Amino acid sequence: MTVDHWEALFDSTYLRWFDIEGKGDIKVEIGSVSREELTLRGGAKKVAPVLKFKRAKKPLVLNKTNCDSVAKACGNKPSQWPGKSITLYVTTTKLSGKTVNCIRVRDK
Image 1 (tube, helix red, strand yellow):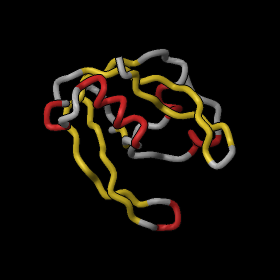
Image 2 (image 1 turned 90 degrees about the vertical axis):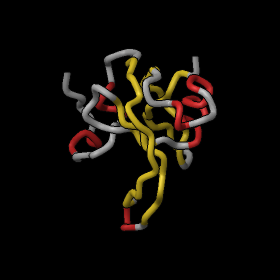
Image 3 (image 1 turned 135 degrees about the vertical axis):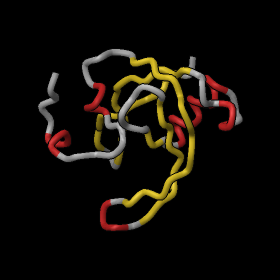
Image 4 (image 1 turned 90 degrees about the horizontal axis):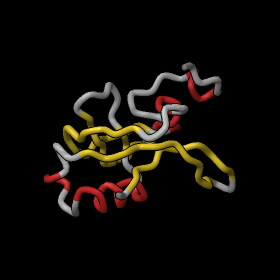
């Protein structure tokens, strides 16, 4: 299924909501967790936690909300997350006063 949304027109190294839209809950096994330097719009740099999955092409950049959910599901020690499974799903959130699509991690 191809997502008909303007954001899907742009390539992304990282997992985006439109990559899993319409697929329901997606169970993935964590392969590794690391901190990576990301380049933001405008060229600014930021270091963020990134999850790589065993059988997925794209890694997921974790924001604090998703990182907290992974910790609830897998424990507080990121070194122990590889090999554990989490569930991803698409929902919406408020960002700068707008409702936008996003990926979330189920914490159960």
